[in-house]
Each structure stands twice: as structure tokens, then as C-alpha cells.
Image (cartoon, rainbow, N blue to C red):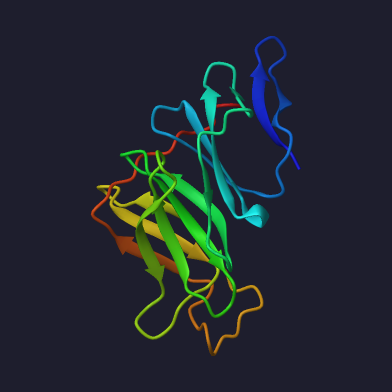
Amino acid sequence: MQVFKCERMQDKNKLVHSQILPRIQITNSICFHPNGNIMYITDGPTRKIRSYPYDKETGTLDESSSLFVHETRKGGYPDGSCVDQEGYIWNALWSEQGQPGLVNRIDPSTGRVVFTVHVGNNTTTTSQVSCCCFGGPDLDILFVTSAAVGTDPEKEPNAGALYAVKLPFKGRKESRFVGT
């Protein structure tokens, strides 16, 4: 698989796609540092989150200089991500059945997990955590989606649920695509 940029041509008012990253297995998420100069790409099957220098003007990245690679624990696959106001990456970890689903806050300068949200309640867990984003009036609520693909409803009765967790961290408003 590949990652492409999409841009609108001024003279023809149409969208054009061009490759910016040639080798990736599954693009589970793409998000950006608050300054817009770093792109984070999650590749589930490889269990890696990579960061690349990103040129906002041209929409290109420097594939040869990956800034960091975060590798998830065995039995977990990085899925959807977002970035908070401080520039930390929040990544939903899709786990194998029987293992707890997590959302990790990752320090972009080291690739280390500095905070973890365990998804579920006191008696059950949800293994297939799929994505996260910040919301609420103060952007301090982390919304977490989950899935129920092949799960046992008796072991994971809340699989597929939407969770909301109030945090001591704040997210940021996401940019919008302005093309047509």
C-alpha cells in the first residue's frame, strides 16, 4: 500500500492524487504535530507509529528521515490516533481478545508511553479499541471508539461501545480539508 496526498488544481478545479509514502501495510491513522511540520503515520500490521518531517506548503514528507518509531507491545496493534495541545500522540491500541484495550499517550520526542487509559469498566474490558479524539467544551474529554469483530459478548459485553473519559490533558481542534 501507499500513502497519497490530495490537492486541488487551481486551473482545472479538480483533485489530483500523488504518492508521498510508497511502503506501508495498513494506514490506520495519520495525524499531525500542532505546528503541522511533523506527520505521524500508524501502520497496524507492523505494530509501528512513525513520524516524518512534513512540508505543509508542498504536502510532501521526507521518508528517509523518520524522527521516531514507536513499537507497540506484543498482542496489540496501533490503530486510530490524534494529537493533544502539547503535541503528544494519543493512540488506540487494538488488542487481541482477552487483552485489555488501551489508549496510550506517547511522547513524540522519545516514542515512550507516558500515560495510559484502560478501556472498559471495573469488571470487563474491551479489547478492540479503534480510535480516539478529543471533544467537549474544553477539549478535555477523550472519546474512544471500539469494535466487536468476532468478540465473545459474554466476555466483552461492551465491545463496540463508545467511551468518554475526562482527562487532565486537552486536545485541539482538528483541521478540516478545504478541497471540493
